[in-house]
Image (cartoon, rainbow, N blue to C red; front, side, top):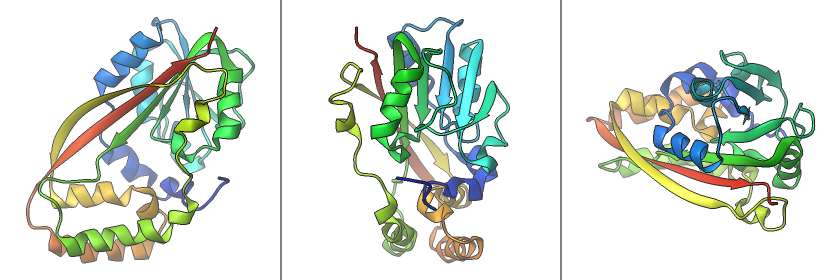
Amino acid sequence: MGDSPLRLSFGNVAETYHRVRPPYSQGALDRAQAALELGTDALVLDLAAGTGRLTHELARRFTKVIAVEPNDAMRALIRDGDVRAGAAEAIPLEDASVDAVFVGEAFHWFDPSAAIPEVARVLRRRGGLAIIHVHWWETEPPLPDYALDLLSEPWLRFSAQRNPPWDGAFDVTPFEPLRYERFEDAIDVSPDALLELYSTTSSIAALPHDERAALIARVRPLLDRDYRLPIRHELAWTRLAG
């Protein structure tokens, strides 16, 4: 989709993103490691690594981790592994150089027609791909309708910059069919913590700083209690065929 303001928006809130985003599911990571048959000596790539939250988890499991991230502000916060500038559509690695590629909360930003061949190119024979998405927008109980309207307006404003669904992009590729698995948990958050989380979503992060702050200030008086935040971790995994 190119380097749209929406795709690059997370750099505007990099420190907050790194600090408040929900942690990755250990169960999902355990399953990915087992499904892709990865030993601790595997060389793995965290593609579109962001601020290195997933990189850190991978570095606890594998002795050799490479993190590739296009956004300078996000990449500056990565503290683990071999950190490189680069994008999914042009991965700065040699052919057949890694055992697995992990993508956390980023595959929907890729151009799959370019990214999938690139992932296949850098993987060794029978190498694996694990794609993790973390969904957490809805609350229990739901937010007041007016608060939801205010928070949803940026999403509608930037909707044209989002990619279409990507699942079918694997239908004719060197990969086996995707397998899907789900893991669930929940956290309790205060109104201020919840709004910090919302500020790291792509469309709110894409707002100019003053507009983003004004939006949060308008919503905050509408929230007068703590909220339960159900979190759904979705793992999609596959391996090179043959």
